[in-house]
Image (cartoon, rainbow, N blue to C red; front, side, top):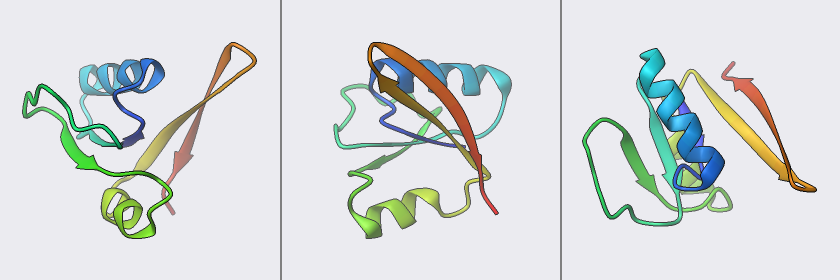
Length: 81
């Protein structure tokens, strides 16, 4: 599973939930993490960079995606085809 923005408030919650559920988790974020625990695969970069995004998506079964709008989060799930 790929989580974009994994160091943000919603992204971190998604990473924690996925890790506890068992699937392999990969995180794409523009920020380099201060702590690497080895339990999450990290890709540093932004979703606006096609090369980085392809690298991050490659081999992932799906991507949880949360949209924050007007102070409310709306989680959705995108499955790889």
